[in-house]
Length: 569
Image (cartoon, rainbow, N blue to C red):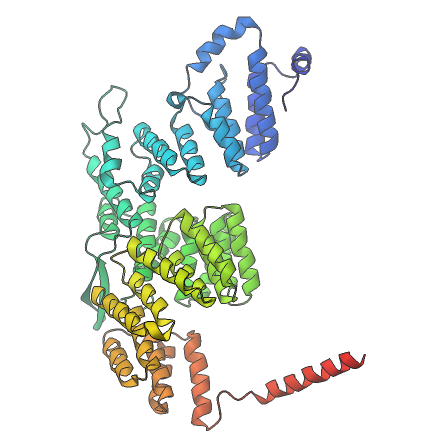
């Protein structure tokens, strides 16, 4: 609401405000205190006063408008004059902080494109991206790189929006220094920046070309994965130039995590995992206060069943900054075992804090899926996919659709994953999973699983799925021979569990027992192995494992008695 001219004049006459500059100082203070509504109102007061100042100030006003390239942080202030574009940017920043994207865009579009500096172009890019106006976002991110080619955030965003390395690198030549020369004409540093661009574009386009090689560690044969041409190799090259760089280490850890999602070929799970090594190097040695990607680290610790480290990580994150979305995703991961509803509320809180935080949507979708709420899970996974499609969102969509028998939609999502990630064995397996969900498609499923294994022979997920298909079709011998072949090279608890299940189904109880015990030696927290072993012990004692426990029968009788009493009352 604009303040009437008479009221502003009265304030000035009383000496409460010397000028619009004082209003801007007040607005900046309110912004720092996160009183965004009051800040917007105060900035608009300043603009209104600026327009009605006496004519004698017009000369200084025109000179102030020529300083559009000065600092435009909402907390900064030009003492000598008011820059109208700066004030509009501050108002837009308040709207952005309040999540009012449309109002912020209206303010920013009131600033001529040629008058926008680096910070203004960045805010404009974020606003366009949030409103899914990707073409406008790309143009603004490119403008950021013309201002400063070292703007890492702009490079990453352009890669995620589909720009090619050539498109991004060509912008560097358009950047000039104060002397008017191209910035990289006299610098050798252009090569590392180009490699960084190539790395981000590889990751954004899911460029994971995987091969297996053998190493010896403590006299143990280990099959490991290596990226022959892709993001991880490029980041490793950059790390040699910038040792212990936090940003590169985090990007490598995230890429290692993607590799775990795409192909599981590490023989020994634990300290040898590259993602855990890089995360721990950042957290423990270099910067113990970092929060970026720490929710992804929490998910990884959960996969590894390292709950003591997970608990400590969450405790540390809470002490650093309890208002960040990463902290609430990590809390959700920690609480999943204890209270799924509580975990879901934490995941939803992370999305409320930052509606573009993808791990929050993934965590929410997985929780809803485990709670047998597939329709709601689809919405969560769609939210993640709209922000940035990756394998996790595709997997979530496929499994959600299958859970409420939407086979056609599941197949469509799986095929979309295959198109987006043609070099991913997991995408192929996803199509196989859909076909395997009904008896008529099992032959097709077998072909997709075999294709996945030809593409990435070390992908255990496809091997386990193929073994399960053999069991369903009564080919237990084929399932055992396939799993034992992989077990020679991979010491993996999931392989032992699957073998134990096959042996138990064919009444080979002693062999099943040895494999359940082997699985628990590798991973003492494996729930499938614990439950399978408990069931097997009943079978070995001659007890029907499906028969209800005596306590359970008593509970049922008590419940029936309670119901009768209720009816009588």
